[in-house]
Image (cartoon, rainbow, N blue to C red; front, top):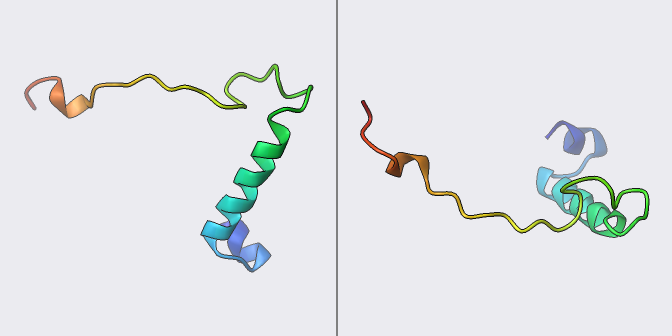
Length: 55
């Protein structure tokens, strides 16, 4: 929100700009070694509220 206010853009527009920049940079040779920078396949995690009683 703060970045959007400074740039004079909506928070959603800032998200889109950052997402596009990330897509362009994910194949950069210097960034390939950074874990989780590119596309990551996430494992399914069971929702915590299904683990048991509330106590």
